Length: 495
Image (cartoon, rainbow, N blue to C red):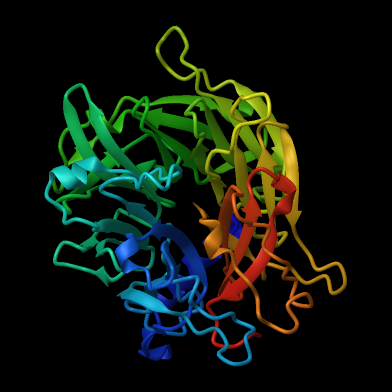
């Protein structure tokens, strides 16, 4: 959702805190999504896949209880589902039935979600969250750590997921933050070794802070201890880790300046509950090249040489004169991570490519197959735009947007549902390609999956925040224009 919508969520939470008697203490559903935001996908061990499938995955979705229909302190959920065996939202025989693998209740207004693996499966070359430090610490075989946060209760959750997709929340799972730790939202993982020091941590951004200070909560993925990382103003939005150089990049929620910042998280002292750390931070001011921008989601390229930044463009003069943010569009900024003479990323702006209106999420797709001349094509990057109700596919090889999923050409309704935001991707075995059996599939905007035998198949999951379903799209990565909507899951019945 856009920054404006997020601020509305904060106000709603504050209002609810003062009049909790007005809201029923009913339990959130365990069989549907409800205003989803954070999503991620994890491939499961083959032994967990029901025959005849030889590969399967768990789609993990954070539902936010955005309108506080359910109890504020327990009205959010984390659901792990099998996307292949869950039925379509529009299936008249079993509308929106989710094949649930795991379920947790959390606080309302959940944020981003990240999954830390003990190792990245060899069959999943795009796995970007391998954390062998967890295996070294004795985490069970097939177990992953799932991290998310509740903005309503200022709580961070460190849950376990086993090889079947089941979720458990142990004694160190709900980490209740201090009163100063407002609005925990973005989640970035930083695992690795540097200068002989190993660490496995999650960094949770805080959208608000006293005096607009930049703060992060650092959570030890092994033991669950947490402390605070203090930065200068402005507040943080989210982060992305480059394991090659050991750098954590940070975007900014809102401030008089819009810096892109980075530091070396693996060099910080070990996590100590109650402690505060002030790392050596480097930054570049976007106002030099891009006046009137808000930095949002971040992604490091597959070859670790570029940083992709979702940009929300606004009228800088209107903000200076009236204090009002007037959105003007969106773009994806491409920054060079090549080292300069100071052994720092150069952060040269290589391109700022217009996308669409809104500030959604970005995900780098798995590496593409070799081009006919033998070189590896540059990345494909998917970006959601919640205001427009669209999904765009940026091709860094071509330097432009090469595919777009937007409005139904007849009805004008967003094909992905209103306010598409949460985004996850996975490489897909073509045998798992979706085959719709709905009689009116074409009328629903579905097309045949382009994933055939031998194709470089990729699946995208896009959560519609306002309509509480998750779209499933598939494409052949060798054909960037092949992105096709094939299924929607998550609602008991279509609106």
